[in-house]
Picture 1: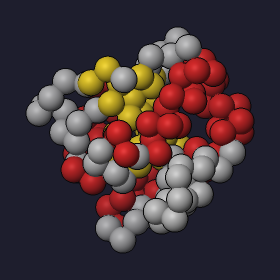
Picture 2: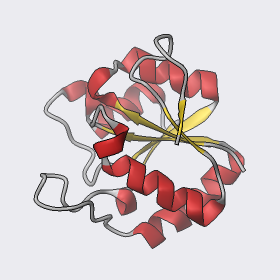
Picture 3: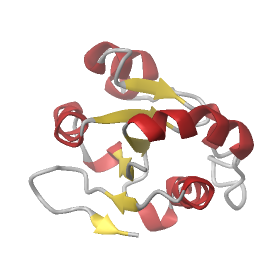
Length: 138
C-alpha cells in the first residue's frame, strides 16, 4: 500500500504543492467539503488547471460538514470516500489537501486516520514547504 500524506495550503504556495506532488509521485486529493476559496489560487478549478486532471481529484466524502467551526469534525460520507480513494491509493500515494495549517486541529487528520484504518496505509503530515522540513509521522 502507498502512503497517505496530508497538507494544509494555508502556509504553502501552489509551487510548493506542485513540488510535493512531483517529488512524491502523488495524487492531490482535495478533501474540502466544497473546493472553493477566497484566494482564487486555491479554488478547485485553479488547482486542476495548474496540476492537471491526472494529478488532482476532489473527494467531498471526506469534507467536514462543520467546516465553519460550528462543531466537532463530521465527515460528510467517509464510506464513499474510502470507495473512491482505495483504488487510487493502491496505485499511488495520496496527498489529502485542506486549508488548515495545523494538522492536529484539521479534519484532514481525522480523514487520514480513517483512510489508514480502512486500508492499512501509513500517514505522514507535510509542512507547507517541501524544502523547510521532512514529513512528520502520524
